[in-house]
Amino acid sequence: MTAANKNEPDADSSADAIVTACGYLTAQADLEREAAEVLSGKFDECTFDQGYVHQPLYACLTCTRPPENYRQDGILNNVERPSEPAGMCYSCSIECHTGHHIVELFTKRHFRCDCGTQRLLPQISEGSNGQCCQLKKLRTELQNIKNSGNTYSHNFWGFYCRCDKFYDASTESGEMIQCFVCNDWFHDACIGKVPDEESYSDYICRECVGKHAILRYMNTNNMICGTVVDGRVTHVVANSAIHDASTDPAPADEGDTEEPVKKKTRSTGCRQRQDLDVVDAKQPFDLFMVDGWKEHVCTCIDCMREIERSSLEFLVKEEDVVEPEEDEPRSESLYESALRQLQTMDRAQAVDAAAAYHTLSSRLKDYLRPFAASGKVVTNQDIHTFFEQNDKNNL
Image: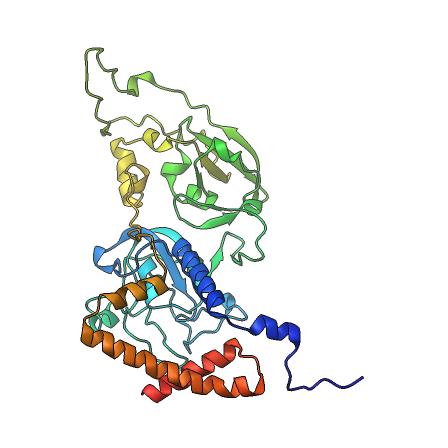
């Protein structure tokens, strides 16, 4: 038996490492298709100028440094000292933080993008002092701005639920349910007994119920109460509120041809709040709200004052979520687009492009000639090395 030449690549590994033009174009098309599915919206405009809005948010754990109790192994931070939590819009998460450790926060209310402000200066490299946002117009002035109207939580460090655990999609086995009021996410196991998914539309956590009296003493048959015992919902009961027909809008006349306009008016008497002595103030419970429940929230003078005082206007108003504008799907690959663009060039540009191509082709042939002479397999790394050298020669 003769010893294998250690300089000769293994047959199987060599076959896997060979790069063909056809294979490269196919892989590139697959990457483009996958990117179009994941990043379906345009990302050329930041939402900062729209002010405090309801929008999808992201946090960057590369450009911020959490306190010790929220630090995670394996996540490298380019910030030396602990920093404040920060959030950014969809566009900034791509344009300014590509390659960073990004946490998707989903939608949150009344939030203005922090990217480029005091809270979040994108870190280009380790030890850098941060760079201005790539999308905002007032780039230099942003560094003096702090969005005082934003609200932050442990979500911005990647932690969720009352158990305060870091969310790792690769290891998470249960379901996460979002609270309609605080927008935090909770493990179904930490909630306890949860009604069938088809029987409710929104979840309100016990912390929010305990914090806001308007929720705790709400009395409507459009909700399911989940009684909490020893930290878990043990049983759920549909609320059996007494329906007062006098509060319903008058039926439209049969001769009416137009639909009545839905408009909430403030009444002087509270029609849905339960008596204080009916609800045990010390008994925690979760609420599972049935579809259409917002139409039954009381809008009497007292309730509306409390709603406005607690910044809960979204309980009685429709919310508009600022979503990224949908990007038009590509009908051609980048390769096909480049060929089409070449055909639109004038003669001078086409000649320059052809000359540049000839130069690149000649360099590539010279680079590959030793491989052909020795019979050595050309790998992905070899191609990357060539282009790195070519970029240096062009400087």
